[in-house]
Length: 173
Image (cartoon, rainbow, N blue to C red; front, side, top):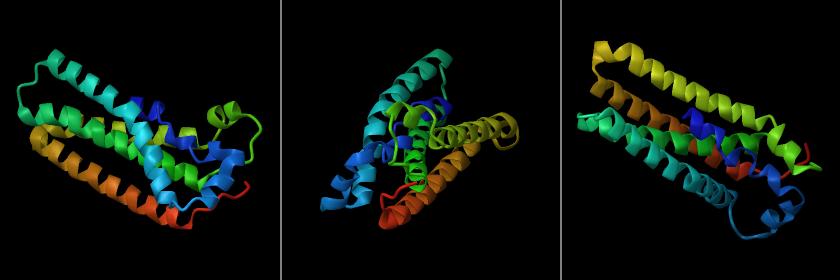
């Protein structure tokens, strides 16, 4: 989740529109459809990296348990979706369309560290749960709980994203 959050493209996707914001306001496409497209672009970057890392990890560690093999792909893919949606949501909340230099917007915006910290929190909580609780509850049970928690977080962020997209307007900040 941490590595995925460092290459998130959605944390500044609405802010980058800048002077072209009139296009969004004039097309008959909902903001949620635009957000889905921006999330899909980020997923095209993240998913191949997750699949390659999962294959290398599975082959390198020679994991025999099917649930561990499955979760080495499933949790990072859900993490990529969570980070993509979270970055888009944060950018909608802190959208800045009045900028002069795109480099300043990308490198010095408030949305990047927030998205990065979200990924750090997600990965550290996952790592801590696996490390500290696998002896007590068993690895399979921990992965099932983590899967449910990831799906709950994904649903919550999707709900917030839909709610924000319904009221989103490009404004000066």
